[in-house]
Image (tube, rainbow, N blue to C red):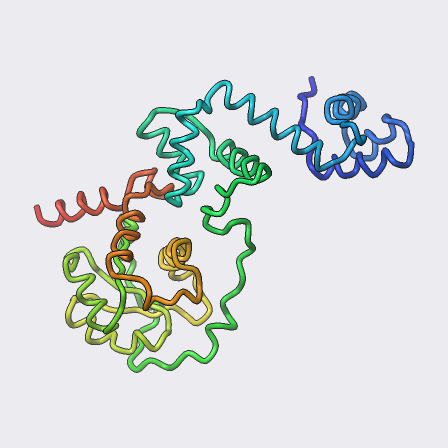
Amino acid sequence: MQTYKQLTYSQRCQICTLKKTNISQQKIARIIGASQSAVSRELKRNTGKRGYRFKQAQMLTDSRRLAATKASKMTPQLILLIEGKLKDKWSPEQISGWLGNEIHTTVSHETIYQHIWHEKRLGGCLYSHLRRKGKVYQSRAASQAGRGHIKNRVSIDERPNIVERQTSFTVSTRIFDKQAATISLLMPYKNAVLTITADNGKEFAYHEQVTKALNAPVYFAASYCSWQRGLNENTNGLLRQFWPKKTDFKLISTNEVDEVIVQLNNRPRKKLNYQTPSKLMKIHMAAIAA
């Protein structure tokens, strides 16, 4: 028994093009790899006053799907809650996981994405709160060129297999003195800091002083190997949601930075089973002190 499959956007483009050649629905179905009944149903449901247009067909289909979802789960109250979290820059996956854990409501991240794109087509701006906003990741290799050599640098290859990154907790501040800032930020969590992994920027030339103050050795990732510092790179991306590249941080106050860090640490993470870094850090520090 065959199951019904929704036509894709690409198939709708093909239908629109082929229909202009006046070939039969049967031939169209064979070319796009769908049943004749699917093509017939598509043309019947999604043909407008100006004929069949693939963009309009996709919009009509998305609207029906969204309406069907809203009828069963996406109540006005739930939509307001979801949109509020999106504006706080939570990802659809984080919202979905949080709803399951805290509200005991099951809404898939795909459903939330559908709501975002539908709202965008209607002129909305929820999509602007997404981390990448649909942009393709660009390699940073070119911008990393020319970084200086660091004295007594210890490679990440020598880092012991210590279990770290248990909480994804973030600390950050406006920097006036790089060395002092790193030490002061991490000092309250000194007992939880086992190692530090850095890139090859000159700002880490003082790594020996950091190691002495925190009793935590600093290891350096290989050049152009950002995946060796995955959590750091991910956190940089989260911060870019608030402050895009070329932001003049002279105009950003310390209080603004503190508020953003609080938001990030109180945002549920998929890798943490949708618990928050803040909660897990409190538990972790309490366990260390016990």
